[in-house]
Image 1 (tube, one colour):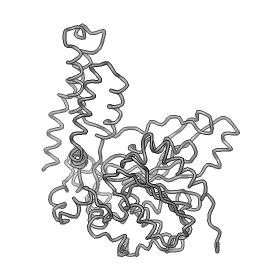
Image 2 (image 1 turned 60 degrees about the horizontal axis):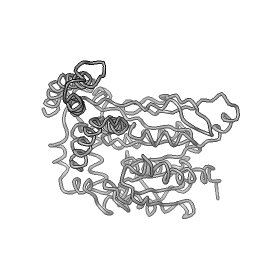
Image 3 (image 1 turned 90 degrees about the vertical axis):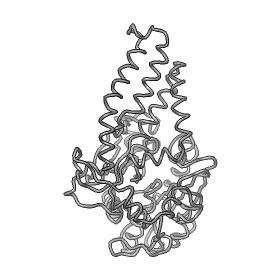
Image 4 (image 1 turned 45 degrees about the vertical axis):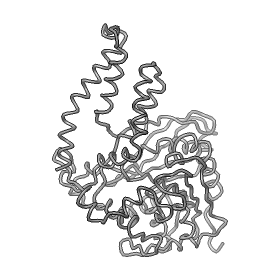
Length: 420
């Protein structure tokens, strides 16, 4: 019923948001006579703020038509290379007419970026992808909004997530791919690689894990505490809802994106309130650069997706309540996850000093679990002054983290020889 109430609210706010958008343009467009009335600037700013508070935020585009690579501007085309019911594996294919550049790009390492399935779309990693494209062939997991997946496609569990990652690694080629996981997927990625190693399959050249809950008991954050202070039955009864009739996924049980978004806002309400006020003042000053930066951020931040209920509840129970991975008790589709079986995949972990989602030590714990990886093929970095998003997006990512990730990938871009 809550989902239906949300849809009614959306239906009511939609026309008001459109009215506010039209009014903002009416009072700000210099060709409009209304833009010259006293107080027009305040009216325009107020109406645009109202529009943005009430509008529906659709999934943004990656919008990466070109990138600077090997000293040249190179065209980029976004392609779907594997289409699964709950995820598309996408590649950002680079094109150049210069023979030397083409030859250089052929030797660039392939990278699979595993985006979180935790509320936001994979486009949250746009800056991650854009930066990686300078020196790599880049693939990404683009998770599909569960409300858009018909019930006939069946459920999606955490085990299915792990199976998807295995399939994507095999499709790209385990002997030629480096995997980068950001936040939530560090756990299923570690499971996928561990299962492949235990079976004797080829495994990725390297794993880079960034700000993930490998060991949530280490420096628990507010996110961790929420999961441990309430029983699983509370989550089932309070945050799981049914997709209404106006979506293809009608009848599917989900954790709605609008609830996750409310949780995001509740973590730092003052920061968001100040941000909107600053946006209003930027419009009054005519500071379009600051205003546009605000629009870009919230166009991404406010665009959320629904998660399949089975997957969400599995993650709460397995990762945040029972701690099955660090305890060595996690079974995926009947197979025990044994990270110590990983021997040929290099491991790089990255944490933000000020991360309030995955506390210090939670990602570093992967080194203790992956005891089969030689010390010389492992590395760990703590990024000073960085919060959660700073380790994969923004200035610190581009200037501090990325150069280290790039060098780590280059260092271990050759498969380990058997018996070495």
